[in-house]
Length: 116
Image (cartoon, rainbow, N blue to C red; front, top):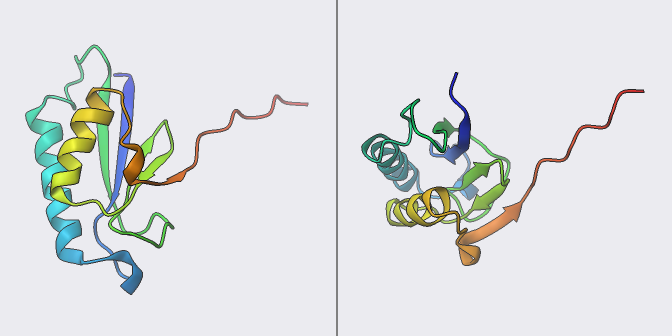
C-alpha cells in the first residue's frame, strides 16, 4: 500500500448559486486530473507518496468557488480555475509552498484524544 502525500478535493460539480460557474469547475477538474496523471503524482512507486484526487459536490465553503481542499494541511483555495490548479499543484503540492493569497480557509487536522 502506498503512502498518501496529499489528497486534493475539488468542488467541481457545484449545485448552488454561491458555488461559482459549473463550467469553471469542470475545466478545473479536467486540468487537475491531467496534471496528477501527467506529472506521475498517482504512481504508487513515487518516493514522496501518491497524490489522490476527488471530485466533490460540496465542501461546505460557500464562497469564492470552485474551491480546492488539500489534506493533510487542511488548506482551502478559492476561485480555483484551471490556471490556478496548475500553480497550486506545482508550487504547493510538489514544491511544498502554499499560495497564501488564494487560501480562503484553514482547517488543520487535530489529533484524536487518547482513550480513557
